Image 1 (tube, rainbow, N blue to C red):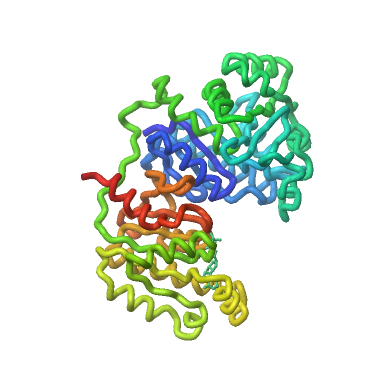
Image 2: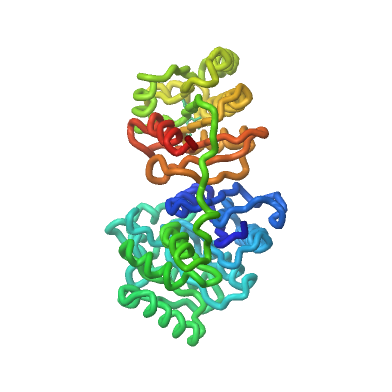
Length: 427
Ligand code: ADP
């Protein structure tokens, strides 16, 4: 399948967010962790390819080089339109990386204009007259003003962007966007004539994103947060760019039995674990015991379980439990012990035939994904907002994997995840 939209994201959770929003339309979306090593001309690709980089706060030259390499891979996979995804709070410094990366992509693609739209009104990110708001606060008065790596001390996107780029910066404001896609196209054409390469586009409501996507869907390069890309699959389906049959995400038929691995100690995850333990057998990991005795007794417990049953292994505990472990072992060591144990248990479960994995915790997800050697995911059904099922290859088998960070989902998330997979499986 040739690639209809090639997307590059500057961090992993941002890439997951974008992939999930694109997949809401039911089209097949593929998410690759890091620069792919497969040959783009021969490997299997999806209509929507998302490459997750870790370039948000990398040195400018590294971010530019890595993003250009990702672009090259996507072009060789057949993509003709591209999307550069960064944070909805425009996380960057006067040096970059948003502007320099966008400018390098424009040069490689051979286009003289792109748009900048980090708005995500559903999540409280809106842009008016070029100024970015977080909820009701201007960006520079929001908690982002104190971010340790990218403190945002100005709310005006044109002023933020100007020192990052060589080309001219301009604005297509809300009054224009409210007039519709044709008015926006005309404004962009007028700005092109004036030599404006970098156009900030206002969006204060969801419908603005539809107008912008409609006006810009054939631009060689769009840049923004994830939300402005969300309408693109439906637009490409409607105009025939994307064939309606070939592109459905398919849930593979996987044997019963799931393992839930929880290393998150957030309030919501604690409630989710308690709820889950009412109906599923569980094993609690304790970092202090792990430091003395290793992970063997947990592995033995797992080996004694039927791979076709569902089970939970968790280090999730209340703040006093976390404090006790951290005081004895140190914060880093306690975390590492838990992550290494859950990573090992994930591999054991897979080798014993388990094919359904639910992982709770951002760092924990990183450790488990790495140990299962997952480098590419196809995005499936959304379980809770921002948390989809994904399907991937691990150790020669197809597995279902969902990665939930701390506070996502409601109390019944684990049961919801397993039920939703059951419902979307082939009958
Ligand atoms: P979240 O998404 O909720 O932040 P993470 O997995 O990113 O979850 O972070 C939780 C961290 O806490 C991990 O490094 C994990 O290993 C560590 N951890 C989990 N359980 C315990 C525990 N009982 N004591 C101390 N640290 C723990």
